[in-house]
Length: 279
Image (tube, rainbow, N blue to C red; front, side):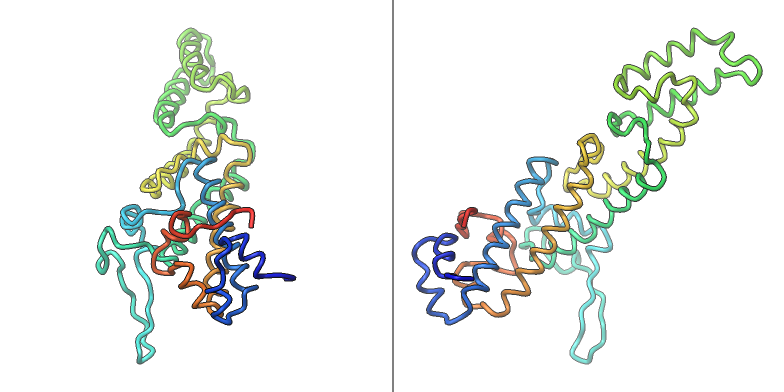
């Protein structure tokens, strides 16, 4: 890095002498604060594109502690014995969210979403309703497929029930006007019944992450929506670990800037730590 002080001034403003006087490597400080900027950009992108905030509030984190993988953490005692601790039993709902807390959430969220991604890729690569399905449609579609299957005679088909089947198909078409491969329902209902299993799984994951306010179905409507979300969650997790790793050599610089591992708010709040995103 040719002139780390000049770059630091671009990031933090002209008053960087306190950082210089620490004697700590300014190159490391620059990289750390650039990673903070990248974290903020990921947070803004996910909020804008997918409608939920990865910079979780304390109340949201406390509700997420109903998920065992987030709630239970292992701590090593002085005698090297490993103890499992419940965070929910040892913290208040308004307690600040630490970077380690956020990382545990991101790790579990990524695992949940990746499971859905794999399910779609491996078992439902040509799902016909995925671009229009909503959670509120699942029970209604189940009822329509059940009804139309009853109307189908083994020998006569829809010879005597065609008008009833047509009425059901019209209702189904109203729900999914652009899912052309899903119509007519009298022909596709076995496929639709099978596909509903996927949407029930997605709904289960969405319910698990309800404190976030995630709408997985809307995300799946977007072009490569789930892939892009996974990439950004992974990016944020990587940057957080990078910040923790790099900060070991610039502890004074981090303290001067106001960055805290025990509270993610300065990390994402430009009013607490002002950083130029173009620095």
